[in-house]
Image (cartoon, rainbow over all chains, first blue to last red; front, side, top):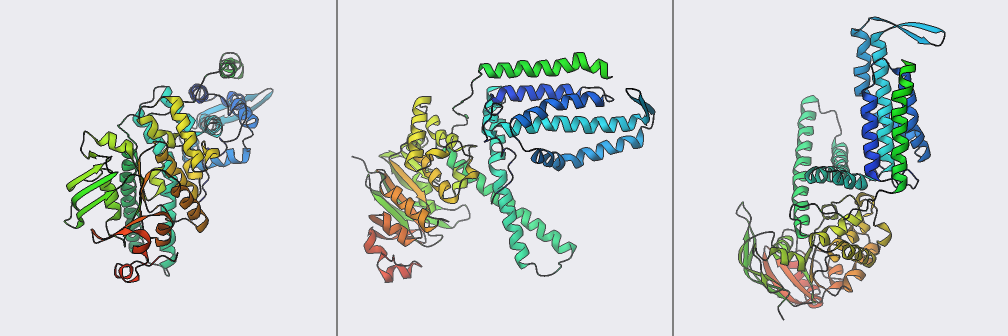
Length: 258
Length: 238
């Protein structure tokens, strides 16, 4: 079965794709921390910050439709949080844009800030995973000092989540093929529980087989990989540009827009 | 020269009391291509697990002259490569390169040697261009070949394969036969597919209900209609 992988564009080739995964990860981490720490009423500066990841996505030829689809997929959780803000904080707030003035409330400002921060940080995150192969990201995280056990867990999660989805689809299909009438809530619940149980048992079975496969190839608890990562001049240049962009906006532009 | 595999009076009982293997005595010569045939539940996979030291029973199991025990286990796993039935269980790393390199790295080889072994193994199975692919991007036939490459990279003397022809179309099965037939290693293959077994092996061991029922020339055993039918199998067409 073919799935929509989160890193399906990471196998393309561009200057951004070729950057070291550690550099990209650290830049995205700092970028996210700065964007999140912006004051709750700084909506316009968020638009400026969005230029960074947006430029990277366009440069790396990541289809914007895919980007917005990914954002929409995770947006319901944030939407609930953001849209609840205007309900409980109705303190008046005046928005100024050049000669124009609007009356609003702090709640609405907070709502737009949450949505803005969510979109900008998601753009950065999507830019990272769409231009970095998951395996390179894992190697990068390991080289940055993430404990081996966490790297193994993340690797297995990425490798087997699709196998699990496939199995779930097969079970659902098997049920659909034989479910010829409405079974009622109680029976449906019982069937769902059995299906989940079957999935769990098969997952345990798979885990045991993987353990055998790992031991058969000499696994002794230590995670060894051949790291192909190397910091080059272009990586340093990327860090310099990213730092100038993030700090420049924070130090020079933010005070003007507030 | 020591035998590739030597098993003497090996018995294994499942924790629920079911006898999986009873009094198995078997020896395999180096370089031999042997197929373990038998109906479902005959004990073929369990016997392969016993050869690799994954299950402990009563009796003696020697691999390349080494008795299976905790002290010898690392050496045994270096000279005996096990390929599991489901390639998805065998391929657990994020990329094919990392997966094939997993064994050689655990053997403590230098990075350059590991790279050479990975390249050679992938070349042998015809996946040289796929090194950077994630296993879930491979087809069933490619996954099977990749699973074999993970073993070949460790350059073992003995390779055990559990139902390697499962879920393969005729073309991929043909390619697999071609690949396995020319491997210089001792091969022990568990399968229910008699045509696949006949195309590969010079010796067949028929297992049923955890016991060895017949052991001898592959073609002779697999063309014995009465014997095969009695044990729920079919004769090979070729």
